[in-house]
Amino acid sequence: MGKQATEMLKGVLEGIVLAILARRRAYGYEITAWLRDQGFADIAEGTVYALLIRIEQRGLVDVQKVPSEKGPPRKVYTLNEQGHAQLAEFWTTWSFLADHLEQLRGADEHGADEHSDDRHSDDTQGEKR
Amino acid sequence: MGKQATEMLKGVLEGIVLAILARRRAYGYEITAWLRDQGFADIAEGTVYALLIRIEQRGLVDVQKVPSEKGPPRKVYTLNEQGHAQLAEFWTTWSFLADHLEQLRGADEHGADEHSDDRHSDDTQGEKR
DNA sequence: CCCCGGTACTCAGTCTTGCTATCTACTGCT
DNA sequence: AGCAGTAGATAGCAAGACTGAGTACCGGGG
Image (tube, rainbow over all chains, first blue to last red; front, top):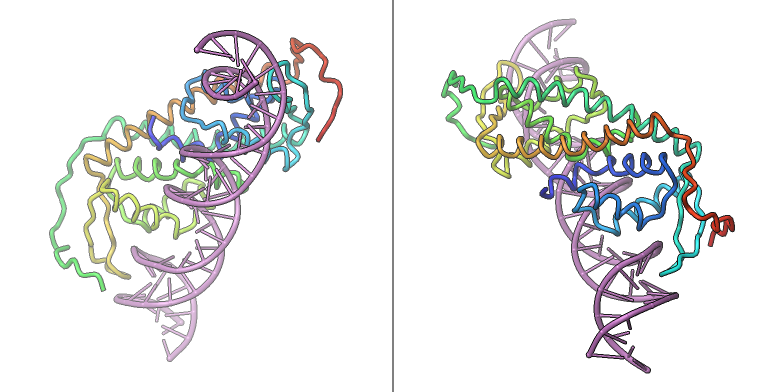
């Protein structure tokens, strides 16, 4: 996938991570690994950590430091009540978008190639102030 | 909808406009009006014009100036071959996202509260830096 | 012994994109 | 003349994702 995905991820990635944390608590490295596993190959590590810090600062998650056998201690994130509320709101917005997009896709698919050549060519005065 | 939608629109709005133009050519004001009609109440006018200028400069659309009976001339945008390709790519990315999100939503809905305690519980020392 | 690779997290700087606010310009109504 | 509606352009800001580098801790190979 190209960089198209990069822009589409904005806002959506937060919802994805909240949804992951709704299933069970997790730490950054784990989430990153899971995302790569799922095919989100182009998500940078730094992005996930930055996102986790953001949602922590907005009070959507609780954090515990857990010592790891190898490497520095993990920061384990747990979705709290506010986080669940935020996730619910995310699903609402997502549904709205998904519904409208699905509608547009349907309309596009059965008529993507018509050439209605009724263009009256009186537009030849291409003058911009 | 709050500002949650604002971030989620990034990247998606371009796809929406391309999809609209795939159905029939249109000009900015028309597109803005249609979006408002569809419930995208919070999309600013300037945003649509800026987006149209961007996709024009990337060569995804052809433009004609058409004099209007009331007001200044309209800039009518038509999706060209490159634009159709871009739109196809958009649908690919969108489907990928939608599939994974749908999966996560399902997983969340039937088990938002289970504690799979497969993590050896040596994490009970709630130390926050 | 030191460096390398894997684990785990942090941070500064850049780019894209949407929003706000303002401006131009043309038409018709009051 | 002034105002509302139509139509578009633009400058400056904010948020989020990326790049790239850095810190820290562990174990194994040269």
